[in-house]
Length: 179
Length: 179
Image (tube, rainbow over all chains, first blue to last red):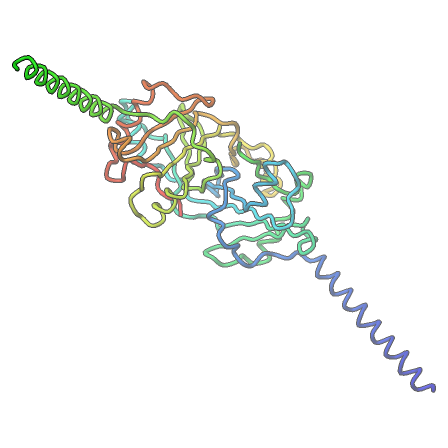
């Protein structure tokens, strides 16, 4: 009866070790940042959260759009629920010759710096995807950047959370809703 | 028998004059610019056409949104059908202290002019509503500007069409779709 007992103990021990290893592995997964690797479908159709302009080396004009969960949370000033996705699209900041000529005729004098419009896409597309369990290591948000449709390296992505972490009190989201 | 004949002729003449006056009146209505006096419902939910920045005295950052008819026509590069509505919303162009501080920490040096975001609404809301019959006098588009929710005077609105007329070949619409 000893061998079966020993075998049973060994089996229990083995299963216990497996369980511990699995738990450790799950814990490691939770602790490591996870980044979003696929472009969320239909984002160009989402509603407008706000617009912005980055000067300096970024030099773009941008729009921040949100899916329905995002827009609802913003408008009701509630916490962003799991499923929320926010996207930042940026375009080159181009002086509009056509618009400036039209303004010039209207004003009766030449206009050099007046109208700037969105040109080609620039500075990639960025997403924040809310899933409080999956992205627990980065405040419940998964981050993504796509350059020419391809996800940026994880080394690049590691720069996201340290900045967003500064505004934890606003659930890590910089952009305010433009009324 | 002469009087009834005369009366009949007079009546016919009278009716003819009334008909001509009505036609003239209708024609006058068609020829006079008609402006949009009600804010189209739900415009803040519409999809994004593009973003822009106006410097000079306007000094704003803006978004141009379109209803489904507008977006479909833009994306398919087709003529804008009746029912198309395009809206221009503008906000004050505000330096973002919060964003600049975050950039500064990231870059390791102070950042003065970097991030500009949408502040309060500014420069009213403007609409273009397509109805080729109703707005025939202004190229098939009805124009609107609302300041604090109230439609601008017709004298103000008369400035719309002369500028838009310059781009008749693009159906009077300045804004290009931002891909």
